Length: 148
Image (cartoon, rainbow, N blue to C red; front, side, top):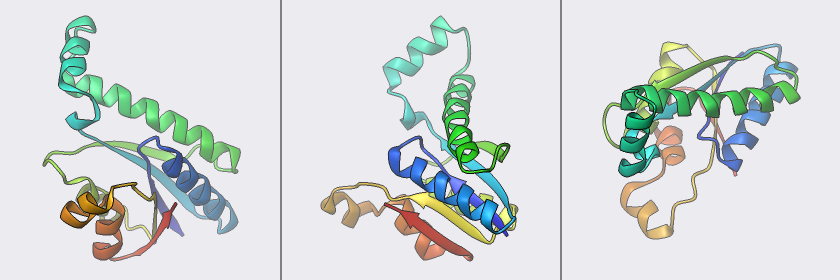
């Protein structure tokens, strides 16, 4: 079984990675952990400051921050028996396209299961824009597990 876990470094995402790792081990499958990064992950002022102090592009800064989140997710996976999962840092091109990026990664990797954490949007914003997990559940062509 091919499993894809999406992480944003949150507590729910960490629980999702742990479940994905346990399932991977139990089912003798393969695990890929992804993080979708976007310029919205870092406030504009902070991103500008980091590009100047680090002498790097905003894409380089975002990639470094994403790799940090992936390292943490790999540590969680290792605790549950998957010491070296495949990882990928994906840059979100279109604002608000995180769910679509996750689904695209799942299709490109021909995964059987997507595991991700539930996003805590307020009722009003959830009604207006929906959440990443809701969009993935409603549009993915494979099984999806959402971890609270």
